[in-house]
Image 1 (tube, helix red, strand yellow):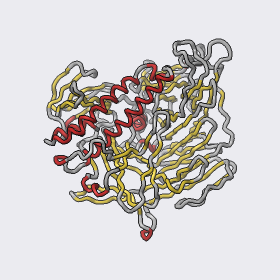
Image 2: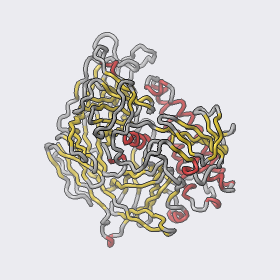
Image 3: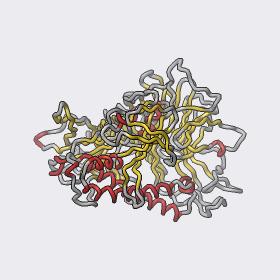
Image 4: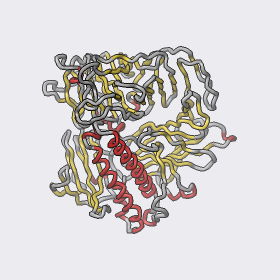
Length: 629
């Protein structure tokens, strides 16, 4: 985002922009240094001492807040209609705040509430960092549900308002009461590649009645007798002292849950085939004698024990756009969302687990799926999000030796189906039986394992892990992969879902004076043609001088993913083009026509090309270019 804004600034003879570009660049440089520090192997694996971990956390929290300032200032500049006359009123002014915030590194991100009181127009701006148009669901908190939500489109040179359908869902407190000052607002946004788009909301006056574009969610509570207070606009809450099996669905899948709100099967709607996919949480204890599990060692006392789920409180939300189930277990809050979205986020299940291990000793918790998939002894995990590797479970080696890193994706498959688990955070996992896939969530160990750390693993924080679960059917008679060479590729849908999970849409609330909204454009879009489905932008990085100010060049790095074409790319509105890339179509109005190819390290130069030159990228290759202003 900063690189595009800096390219725009260089296009205008406005020296005032340096008042923001130079300090923002220093924030970015500091964040780069912190990020490089986090890449130390002890920072990645959790084998750092407690005070070092806290230093990592403080640096990360500081960098996140400073980068949010960068995005706030840059968003305001890019949306400003007259960039030639842009004036910096206050270098430290926060024009936009993100919909999520974290007070410090030890706390989880929480949602900000957009105050819609009064009849002034409120603006929410969405940023898409992908090189393709995205149509996905976003959810934010608002203070009043009775609003009008719309966006402004340019049609034949004229601005036209378009009303947006949305869903209002409840916000519960810790006692399972419905709040009357906060509501979840869910709606589908469509944002062009590398662009910003604004949506507006206005509180309706009493005489205007309710909005016909508003959908209201239905609410059920299982395993409780407490009736929550009635809150408008929701109808009576269904309260049941005992749970019952239920289903949630969207346009692609129907998900089946047991009476405790735990997933037990998935039906793919295009072929009406139901597959048992039983989710459970398991726990490993450590050995009683000899060496025990610690920061470096995983030495369980045997196979995992399934955690008993005994009538937990279950919150079920059902709506036309968004449905969810939240289960409150002793160590875990388990949350599953099913969204009726036209994008990749509507093709599978969005899973979140909030784990609190602080009251437990010598315990390691994992999430496990037992599926009716004949995967035998083979499963697949990724290498740093780059390629997939075949893994074989071997009975002759210890249980812990069958675990592998899962940086972002793992899957099991047979001749007709594939179950893919995409992870937003690197974890460890395995497949210990045919049709089984499990991934670690957290661990707390009370002893040092004598491998150099000198401390037990007791610095646990409340931790959230996010996943996407996708069940796919292979196209009949499609030629599959060659299993003899050990190589495998995710489906195009899984590639897109991973990119969406790791690089989500960013929602920002406008904080400036409402009277100045008219000086901001409704959107910023600069891309002429989207990238192909299998080409991802890894970085657009502005170079710096010795004094840490931005230069006139930026490094642009792209990667073409390899994928298995035997699965339908549902939820994707892009195309593949055999790896062809034209920089002039991606950046038609910024950067000069002269482009320099570089090595990935930016140390060695390649050939010089024109921006209009059509580059052909082979699968799994990465290309680096230097773009000049």
